[in-house]
Structure formats: structure tokens, C-alpha cells
Image (cartoon, rainbow, N blue to C red; front, side):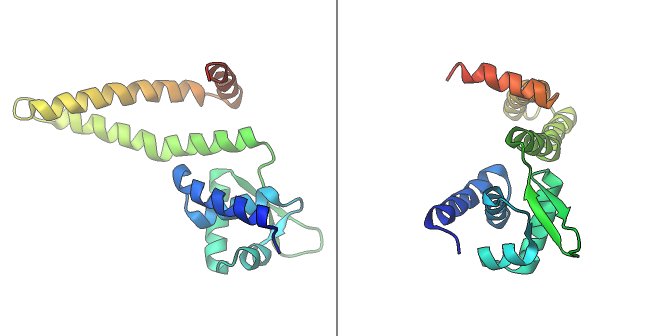
Length: 165
């Protein structure tokens, strides 16, 4: 049984998951694993969070692909166990890098492809908006590339930005 504080954190983290681009169940599982001192098996996750084994299994698989959790084995036990990535910065770096590659880059490239095919004479206003958007996204792309060059460089940029807040 989870304490009220643990439950509140898990539910809040679940809501925050949408902001990250992951579903609520995945974020709740992630929160639960963050709060777990020992590796946790699928059945415990499913039972504790009151979600189906199938949903839990798919969510664990996706969390692993993001680098947010790891699968571990216990000696003498055939079940898979899961732990959260121990280094919070590394976890956030992997998620940010994955989201950039999976979501941001394809959108920027699709915009550039569209612009190269657009009829500039017939759609002047549309092309002006697309050009402005491409300039903004290209700048964001360059900043993200620099920030996601390595964990060390991203941490350094974060430390610099912290001083402006």
C-alpha cells in the first residue's frame, strides 16, 4: 500500500507525463520506480498501480526504449525486474535527445521539404509564414544540437542558464 504522499506524487507525475510526450500510465510507472528502493517486477507494478499487465508491460518496454528505466535480473528468479535510471540528468538527457530525434527533427525536415516544393508566387503569405517558422525552428535545432551534443555539454549549458533564473 502506498502512502498518501507517494500516491499524490505518482498521480502528479502521471499528469506531467503528457508534457513529456508519454502517456499517463508510463509516467505513473516511472514515478513508482523512482520511489522504489529495490527492483520491481511486472506483477507488483500492475497490482500496485491498478493497471493491466498488458498496459504495464507495454509501458515498461517504451520506458526502456527512452532510457528512463532498465531491466535487471535477480539471481535465481526468472522474472524481469525494473529500476529507474539512477542518474536523473542522464535520464532527462536521453529523453530529450530521443524526443528531438523522433519528433522535432522530422517536423523540421518536413517543413523544409514543403518549402522546397511550395509555389512561391501563388502563396506569398503562406511562404512568408513558413520561412519565419523555418528560421525559428532552425535556430532551436542548432541550440538543441549544441545542448544535446553530450551529457557533459548539456549539463554545462543548464548550469549557465540556471544563473539567469
